[in-house]
Length: 383
Image (cartoon, rainbow, N blue to C red; front, side, top):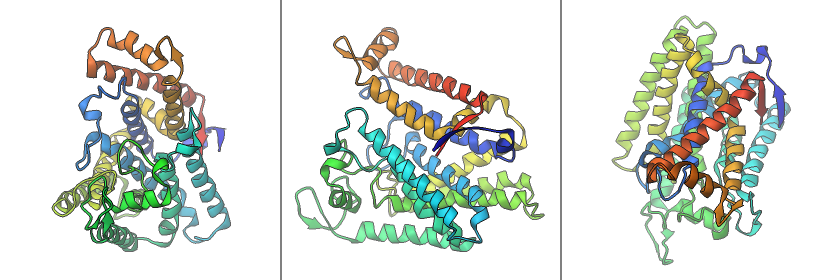
C-alpha cells in the first residue's frame, strides 16, 4: 500500500464514468455512515429492517459491482496465465491489506480484541477479490454466467434446505429469519458470539453470504469485459452501444431479481439471489447512464468532485470511519466531540431528522474538499 503520485499516463485510458460511479457510491456511503444521531436517521438513509431493499441497501452491492468492473480491466493481461506468481502475489497482498484495514478499523478506538468484530465491509471486499480472481481468469462468456448462476442456486438451496437451530436451540427447517438462518449459525460456529455484529442476530457481512456477494463482483466483471470488447474496435459493438447494452442487461437483471422475490425476498444481510440480481441490475443501469453522460457526452466538469472521491475510495472509507469513531470517543464537557458539534452546530436550529441529515451532508462536504485537494495534487492511496 503506498501513496503514489498520479501521472497523466495513468489517467489516460480510464473510464471516467467508473470513477464517477465509485465516487457517487462513496458519497452516499459517507452520508449513510455519519448521521448526527443514530436514533434520528432520515428515513431513506435507513437499511431495511430485515427483508426488503432501501436506497441505503444499494451502497455495498454497487461498490462490489464496481470492484468487478475494475477487475475485468486490470486482470485482462493475465488471462493467458492464470497461475502467474506476479498476479497471485498482488492479489494476496491486496486482499490481505483490505482485510487488515477492516480489522484495524473495527479495533479503533478501544482495541478491544476480546470483542473484535471479525466480519466487515473491507474484509468482505478482500475475500470477494480473492475468490473472484480465479473465476475471472478461467471463465469467459457463458461460463462466467454459469458459474455465477451455479453459486446462486447452490446458495439458495443451502439456505432453504439445511435445518438450523433457532434461538431456543430447537433444530428445525430454516425460516430465513434473523435468529435461525444458516448464515448466522456458521458465523457463530466460526467466530463466536463475541466476534460478530452485536446490533442484530445475523451479521450483515457474514462468511457464508460472502459467496453470493462474489456473484455481484462477477456481474461487474461482465460489464467490464463489455467495455474491453468495445475498446478493441469490435465492429459489432461500437463504443456508443455500451450504454444501451448495459441498460438492457441491467433491466433484465432487475426483472429477474424481482421475479425471484416470489420464492426468496430481497435481503441484504443474507445477500439473497433476488437481492444479487436486483441490485446488480440497478448498478448496471446506473453505470450505463453515467457512461453515456460522462464518457460519450463529455459532461465532466460537474462530476469532477465525484471522480476525486472515486479515485481515493478506500482512503475515504477508512479515514472517514476513523474520524467518525474518534469524534464519538473524544470527550467534550459531559458528552463527546460529535455530540457537541451536532447539538451546537445543527440541533440548535434544526429538528430531529433534518439536523441529523444536515450533519451527514456537512460530513460529505468536508470529505469532498479533502479528496479534491488530493485529486488536484494527483495523489492516490493505492491498495
